[in-house]
Structure formats: structure tokens, C-alpha cells
Amino acid sequence: MDDELKRLKTQVDSLQQKLDKAEQQLQENYYFSSAAVKNLLDVGKIPEHGMAGKTVKTLIENNHSLDFDNQLNTSSYVNVTFEEAEEEVALMGLRVNLADQTVYPRSYRMHDSVVNMIARLWHCPTPSDFEEKGVFAGAGTVGSTEACLLAGLALKFRWRSWYAKKKGVAPDAVLGERPNIVISSCFQAAWEKLFKYMDIEPRIFCPQSDSFKLAPEKISELIDDHTMGVVCIMGNHYGGHYDPVQEVDRVVETINQEKGYQIGIHVDAASGGFIAPFQENLPAWDFRLANVLSISTSGHKYGESCCGTGWVVWRQREDLSEHVAISVTYLGGNADSYTLNFSRPASGVYIQYYNLLRHGIRGYRQCCDNMMQNAEFIRESLRSMTHQGKSRFVILDDGADCCLPVVTAMLNPDCGFTYNDIDLQHVLSQHHWYVSGYKMGFNHPITEEYIPIFSDQDAEQTMFRIVVKNNLTRDMASHLIESFEETFTLLDALDFSELHGVDSLALRHKDQRRISNHC
Ligand SMILES: Cc1ncc(COP(=O)(O)O)c(C=O)c1O
Image (tube, helix red, strand yellow):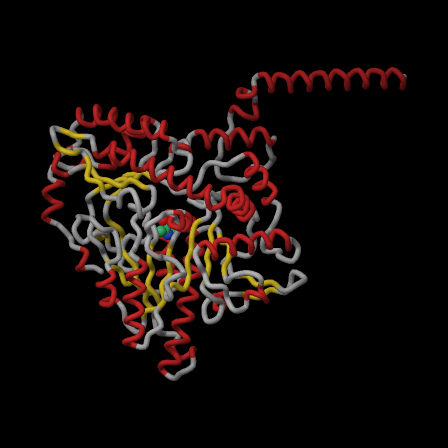
């Protein structure tokens, strides 16, 4: 009887296995209508039972496919192309926590090596403690935002100790004093974080729309004994224009000498840090200028690294980067940490290291020349587009030489279009291109009031930009131009007046707010 039971049980087990296999086969053959996948929905709650990896991957792929194509994203500066070897080293870096410097000393050495390469690219004088430390004063960050915050903090502490000394009191006695920083209204939101998080007063200069740049002769009006620094943007994100660092340096030098201040310059080279060094005919903008104390960049933009890579370099440690250095010993050795977050993957460092060695100076220069030429092609193509004998666009960027490879323009107000640059963005997206249009206004970081960026333009006026990156070939640029042309067939045939409010233009002129009243 026992034997009979055993035999039957084996038969049942075997049938069950066959059934499971058949079920599995069915699920595989009809994967998308399988029980696991057909009702797959992210409800923002951790499921009680986990899912198969393939199923979760499907959910992620679904979401990813609904994004815009990153290769056609001309809105962002962030690099989207990687060689196979870059992807391999990025994966390797995912398993390395860069904060564990004593566990991964060779990875950290690559970090230091990148800091040294970049510091030398920007002509940083060799610091006096280089022999001892083996590295310039600098750090890898997750991007320019973290780099700007660190640089801003170092300036804040430096200013505080200077101010306390000037007043003849201990630094603690001036904790209630709020320093300020001079910057143009073309600043990126990274700086808003500095103003708000670190309680620093922004002294904002608003340029005209034919400049987008700090006016060196105007900055003295914004400077006083609470000024901890002046920010020069090497490639503002709106139009890619470079602030005139050399002239700002001269003005700062004069003010420091006349008033006994010690104001320094931070260069926010988020996008220009890996473009400006490869452009000829550019006046000195980096550590060759005595008052440039720190420079930051996004490795993930024209540095060609992956998203999550940034760099900051200080002229020296003394009375500068030392203010933000934390010494840690708990990892079984002595290590300095500059960054806001300890743990981070080594992927960005690995890819940055890879690219610096892979391209070399000549490779970066070749990429830069190519991007500038493609930008010029797009610029000239837009410039040649007309509507009833008038140029369709007013070009706002800084041309073909000393600026980023960016094309910035606005629809010509003289053409009387009923659509604006943001409508243009939306219709262009039908052709798969993402070209961002935006208004010429921003919320004042302290008052939150919505005000114009430029002293001569209404905050409601719109513009757009096309960021040319390494992956944008001439062939693709030609397609983008064709898409612009096709877009106008539709836009010109429609009337957008109602959408924007019939009187919006009239209202805009009546309510023209001038930035000089606000900053
Ligand atoms: C001038 C400037 N500064 C700072 C940033 C912030 O950079 P990230 O996104 O790397 O933090 C940007 C980003 O575009 C920028 O253009």
C-alpha cells in the first residue's frame, strides 16, 4: 500500500512539474498578457510580495520609453553618449564607494589624478603643500551645484574670519552678519540654493538682452564690506555667454586695493570648464587671474562624463578649501573629505578619468571645434529663415567664438506672430526634438517676486535655446532645421491669440516691469 502511495505521489509530482513548466512556457510566450505583467501598475506602495526581475525591468522600460529621446534633447547640457568601455567602467564604479578612501585607495588616487589634471588645465598655481598632499585643493562632486555650494561656503567662512579681524572681534561675534555675493541675473538655480541654504544675500546685476553678461564697471556699486565674492559665469545656461572675468578681476583688484577688502572671484564654469580651455582668442578667465579663488565645472556636461560628475578646484587650501575640509579617521586611516555627501559611487570619477586620457587635449579641442561649427550651422540656418520679408528670429547668443556651443534666439516680435517660443517648443516636439522655450523672467530668490532677467525685456517675453552636444551630428542638425521649417507650416496656419489672451501683448507693455526696480 505504501509503495502504491509513493508511486502515485511521484506521478503527481511529475505532473505538477509538467504543469508548472507549461504554465511558465505560456507566461513566456504570452509575456505581456501573463498574470504578472498584465496588471502591472506602480501604485506608490511597496508590494507585499516581490516580483520577478524581468517584470520590474519591464515596468522601468515602459516608463523610460515614454520619456523624450535623450539623443534629441537639445535642452540639457548633460552628456548622453558613452562608448562601450565607458559603460563597463561605470558599472565597475557602481560597486565602489568613493567615501571609503582607505578601502579603495587606488580609486581615490584616480579621483586625485583627475583633480590635478583639471587644476592644471585651468592654470592653477601649484599649492605650497602639494609635495605633502600630492593633490591640488579640489574635489569631485555630484555636479556643479554641489561644487558651487562648497566654493560659496569656503568664501563665506573666509569672509567671516576677515570681517571679524577687521572689527577686532572673535569670528563668533560676527555670526549674525550676513555676507553678500555679486552675480548676474543669468545665474543658474544652483546659486539660489546657496543664497537660501547658506543664508547669503544675492546682489544681482541684470544685464541687457544683447549682453547676458556682468558689466564690470557696474559691479562696484554692488560691493561693500559684506561682499564675500563675485561670481563670474563661464557660459550662462540661457545663452552660453561668458562673463568678462578678466575685466571683473581688474575691477575687484582696484576695489580691494582702494578699500582694503579681500574679495575674490568664483568662476562657475559648469559648462565652460571643458570648452573655454580649448578655444583660441579667449582672454584669461581662470587661475591666471590673481583674484580667481575657485572654479567649478560639471564633468557630466562638456567634460563628457556621466550624470553625477562635478569638480571644484581652489587656488589653495589655506584660508580657502580648508574651511570646508572634514578629516575622517573611522575608516581605518586618515582621509580628508570636502563633499556635502560622504558616500557616492566612483562611476563619475572613472568615466572622467577615462575621457581625459582617451581624448587628451587634442581630442577635447576637436570635439569643441565640431560642436561650435554645428552650432554656427544651426544659428545661420535660423538666421536665414524669414516671414513676409522679415527675419523670423532675433538671435540672442554670443556667436561663433568665445561662448558655449549654444544657439539662443527668440521669435522676432516685429513679425507679429500669435504664437510664442514655448508653442514652438511644443510643436517641434512632434518631430521628436526637445528644444526648450522659456520666459525671460525668474522668481527673485529672496522676495519670490517674478521679475525680468534682463533690464530691457519684459518677464513674459519668451526665448529658446538649442544646446549643441557631442552627439549632435551635422546630419541631425539638418533634420532639426527641417523640423523648424515644417513646424512653421502648422504654427503660421493657426491663431494662438485666444490661448494667450487677446490682450496679452497690450497688457504686457502696460505692465512693463523693469528689473532695475528689483535688483
Ligand atoms: C552656469 C551653471 N551653474 C550651475 C549649474 C548646475 O549644474 P549641475 O546640474 O551640474 O548641478 C548649471 C547647470 O546647467 C549651470 O549652467
